[in-house]
Amino acid sequence: MTTDIEETLSQLGTLDAGAPDFVPRFEAGLAEVVPRLDGAMMPRLLTLFADDRPDAAMFSLIHTVEKLDRATYLSGLADGMSSLVRVAPRWASIIVMRVLNDPDYVQAFGTELRDRDAETKEAVTWLMNAINARSSSFKEKTQPLLDAMQ
Image (cartoon, rainbow, N blue to C red; front, side, top):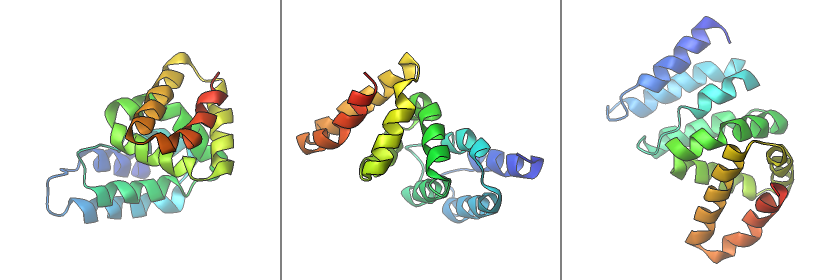
């Protein structure tokens, strides 16, 4: 990443989420990142998710990371799962539910998770169980990921 993109990402992480202009400032920063978006940014972008930040900004962030090609996106998501679940479990759930809604993504994400470390697998297992606790109807969507990690 170039220094100006690193600086933009750093500024996004320190914006005051309670400020009235947070969402437009956050989205303006993301707009600066998008033209040069690459997989190297994924870990840093995942650190911007926070359950106490406005939904509009977090959905803009989701749409930004989803612009990456599938393999890069899912690899980066797998890399960051344990910290994402720990720091922003609500957004981790929303992101993974979006993955679960596409069978091709589920299969590819399962492949990414298969050889991950125990910490990542534990985080994903915890998240799948949390999703299932909301409704047993989710079990058919979460089970393929749980099976893939066996």
